[in-house]
Image (cartoon, rainbow, N blue to C red; front, side):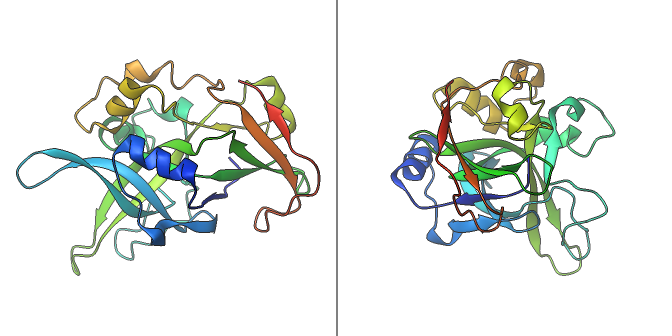
Length: 230
């Protein structure tokens, strides 16, 4: 993933939140989000009575944070977590994939070809995006400050049309029509991660609207949009 997305208030995003059963505060909407910045994540946790419930929390778009400053640890680029490393015990996302998965809502994201001049804005046709993500919870032992660090799971770019957009990876976009998958992904007690194998296969579950843009941070269209049909 190129490393940029946005979250805009829209009927599609409101529907996504309704399907997830959570409200999305207005301060979570952002027109441009870069790695290391604040994002909204949807997660499921237990309350003091031991009951599980879903919530929207603000997180830093970077999985590995400095435990003292709680700022991104820029020594490791951890805003994405590659799917082929999720089962490697020494990888940063190994335990989060098993214990603390989340959904990162988005309206659109940017991908770059890698030549520093070819960029595309990617949207789902008539739907918001539910990125499959993982997170870690950090607490500063001296101050008690608590923050989440999160990353987006990325898949191999095996979709033919994607080779001209971003040949290195494809972000995991969960199928919101698959309620069983969504429930298992958010359940912190569900650890049979081998059942996610099909979801982690690179494939399209919805039609994409692709728009050439000038720069990742500007989002300005420079040519007509086209569709990649699921």
